Image 1: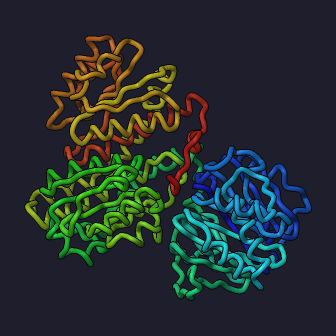
Image 2 (image 1 turned 60 degrees about the vertical axis):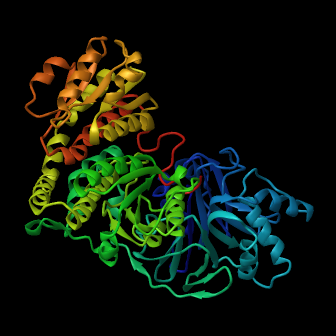
Length: 608
């Protein structure tokens, strides 16, 4: 959850400036507190994010290497004493850490008995003291760090620095992502590539149980048992500009506006229109195994879980495969019945979501074929699944997921085509889906042009404290997503429901102060949605209808209408979610809230 960044170089750069600038690109990972350590200048820590840290940096704070951190609190309140980096008793060993040290209490008791003095409530501080303790017996910083890491249980992405060897920084990974940046006369360690990209696009991703050492002149990687590891660098083709706002007020708005391009990027090179086929290179290695799959389980968390619910409708209706969608956090603690005829699909934007990763590992233990739909190239889930596809959505900076969801839904359509054409889906049906799929970017552009209308509606309803979202079939999950987005960024009480559930409880909440957004686009359940709207209006509930262009009748029934272009029912969730994203964005903006960094949330959940 936290963001770490480390730098060592001999190319004339000021490490403090490099680290502070890099932390800015990591703020989506945490912003409870921030800190920095340079062996030549000392440490500065503060509650709050980078802007607060920058204010406290003295003018003479200079050096050639250092480590830095942004914290999302797990153990200990977000105070200055709990901010990273943490040090040993003598201020010689310093550490930044993303994750949770599960055995920190027993380690701390042992270290206290040895005479160590602790200054924070954080689990991380034990790491610095452990290294200090092992330095009493080991001849080198590397050996002491390795001995300390072998005592630790839990999840971690770590950068360690020793004041007596300032050019050398040690990184380690166990369950939390770590990437090395390889430059010319300079090297980097980070939680993800974003702070590295302004300096180099050559990166190496660490795997669990690996340790790396960087100096200005090079790097080496070895396992916790000291076995050497050889790994080629990966070239990251994201541009620095992709991580910037591009003139938009917030990353969230920029990322919503990128929807048409995201669809095109997700589909590029993956459709064979003449044959009604989806070409997914990432699945070719397991294509024969997929023909024998009799059951699919989708595991995910948050918005990715909602994408999975939409995928369930697609895959069952068009591919004829039984599908279950599970919260990964629940799946991993069950005793799921899996076998070699089960495919487990993990959906994750970051590819590092801990619960989803553990669900994949459970699936592998039980013999299931594991597949991934992941945005982050080289991420852990992408590496540990048997096969899968990348979203190609580019970096998503805002905590609330928007363009990643659009991409996940498009990828699930591709999965449906792939599975369906292996089974009973006819070429005519597949061609119709592909033809309509290709029209979606232009249709999303049309929706985005109604931005001002949606902003006006958000302003009209911004003083309400409660909101209901309803839909049916594959638009029921989109109702869930509409409510989730409103909750995430505006802290509203919002609920998403299947419209068929209205008479089983939720309708009791309806009055003139409880508005409903009803997803009532043209499809097989349109008349039933209209009946639900009538039920709400009979109880004086305000209604915003999300309707298909040209539907004049629903305008006579609803208080307000947002129109979207017509598409086939299977693809309607991809269009219908876009105005709900805009509505949530402008609702939160109207309330003056921090849209990109909602309270208590972080982008990548790499702890339980």
